[in-house]
Amino acid sequence: MSLNDAMLKVYIFLKNNEGASGIEYAIIAAMVAVVLAVFIPDISSSITSIFTSIKNELSSAANPA
Image (cartoon, rainbow, N blue to C red; front, side, top):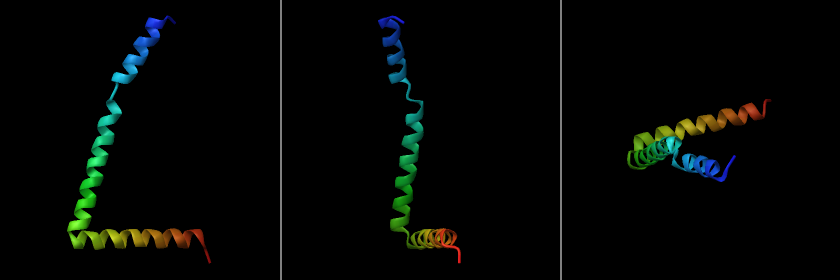
C-alpha cells in the first residue's frame, strides 16, 4: 500500500459521516424529552413512576427472597 492509498483511505474515513446524523437526532430527541418532562408536570410524574417501577423490579430481581 502506497502513501497515496493510505491517505485516500483516511480521507474517505474522515468524510464518512453516516453515523453522525443518527447521533445528532438522538441528542435532539433526548433534549426534547427533558424539556417535556420539566415543563409538563403530568409527563414528569409519569416518567418518575415508570422509572420507580423499573428500579423496584430490578431490585427485586437482584435480591430474590
